[in-house]
Image 1 (spheres, rainbow, N blue to C red):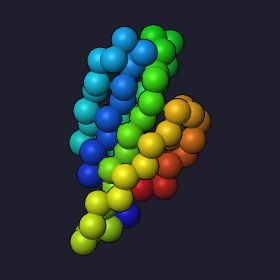
Image 2 (spheres, rainbow, N blue to C red):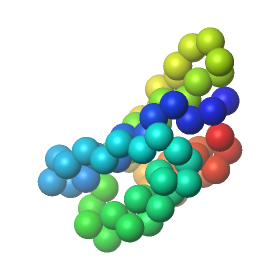
Image 3 (tube, rainbow, N blue to C red):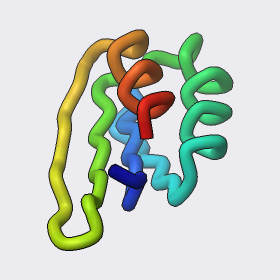
Length: 67
C-alpha cells in the first residue's frame, strides 16, 4: 500500500492535505499541540483507494509509517 492522500483536520476545522508520508508526519508533529480533530488517510494498492479515519494521533503515525 502507498499513500494517496492524508487529510489532517484541526480542531478549528482547518484541513491540511498531504501527498507524502514524510510531509504528513511532519505536519502531524507540528500541529499536534494545536489540536487535531481527525486524520483521514487514503492509501492505494495500485488498483483501489482505501480510506482510513482515525482520531488517534499515535495510531495515525503508526499507519503512515507502515505505508
